[in-house]
Length: 220
Image (spheres, rainbow, N blue to C red):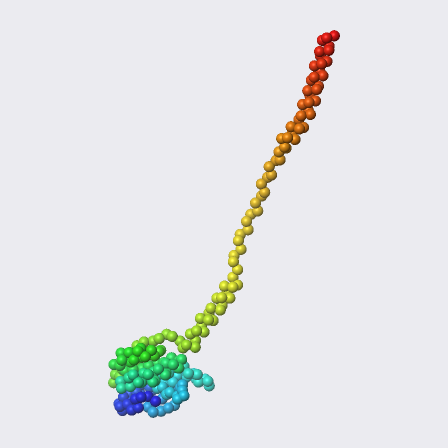
């Protein structure tokens, strides 16, 4: 239950009127239940349960919670309201939308900033005769906590598998080098000299015999 138990009648009528206009707006995307005034039609959270002004749910039989919307008036924007209701709605792990009068934007933003309350969409509304205009002041593009950590983990797994399956490119085959022609073997010098020595000796003997025969013929 809100710390503001009784609003001025005029503010309460405007508050409930804004709730019904927002119900028509959100019905386009989800099933929207409302808790205007002292009605308790759609509880969330708990125990004890909370009764935000608008409760956004899926239209199937599971009725999964998609978000909550709270509408404030000038008298209901205070520290106690922010701590009790805004804080509880922001911890539901679903988008939390806050609507305040145009003249109370700065004070409401200061409250949820000082208290570290996560507001997904921050809106202002202003009355122009019979019409009410809504203006988006701030939007936080952060999905609920349950989906934030799951997406990077799923994206990292295929990358790791692809990195493992990659094989390094094979190096180009090098052309086979032809072996250099072997140098001709040289015969050992000592062996050549050894073979040439007998030939020289035989020639010397032949020359000495021919010289002796020549001398003997002259003597005769």
